[in-house]
Image (cartoon, rainbow, N blue to C red; front, side, top):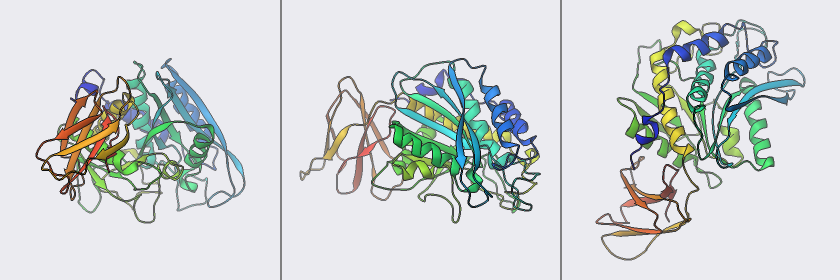
Length: 373
């Protein structure tokens, strides 16, 4: 399996396109979810996506309930663009379109929100442009969430409706604050993006993060993922969390060195961003999404044969016509170290890799692996 094949023929994210989207959104005095600026910003983004005729672009309407930073119940709007695949399984990517200035009253400007989080919306919009030229096995959704700064309200509404309506969501890639490679303390990292994930019995977010790291490592030149095995940063949240809470696999992409003093202030401006870095983050997301877009369902019941040998045999329940991949890593390694394409099989023996010292998994080709027990 050559992961590079999945991105070889795709256009690559353009820093100029990314900058244009960020500048368009940051030009609104505020995009606070309780302000008059939110809906026009959503409409502007929808208009930007409308020319791609393969996309179904809609304004997602919901209610912002009275609560933290919401003075009373009021209408909320976010953007959902869908590229229908050959089956209903969905891969979601998004950022939040709303902005916040904590130095003044809610809903008042200025709140340019360039990095937090026009950067993530720009990634989703740029990938929508690239993917819109083709059709994939799975359905791809490109989202600009709102209500994030009021407590993840827009993503919570979408995740709850997705669960109620029976959406088959295989993965959620949340990009939030991904447009700067440095901070004011002199720290800089142009070659990595962090991926936060949690582990639970109800979803496969941790394995989604581990798989994303592998895809990025195999496809990106001089760019890597830094895995962080936490739901999110201390005292902070993101739009991936409501999806994970509803049983969907979801992770957060975020730059390595945040500048906290600019977040939620008038200083979150375009000129403080690094658009070459943002393009690298977008390219990493592109590779992960392209892989998942072509992945069949994971195998059922992957198991390790419990015999006393120096080899390890893995078995699983296969689906007709689906190719599989076996993965292994040391028990102490956070990343996959061995990747073995095995084709249309329902078992495989990994020679001279013992089961006591390693963890094994099986996945459909280009899909999230499932740990073998």
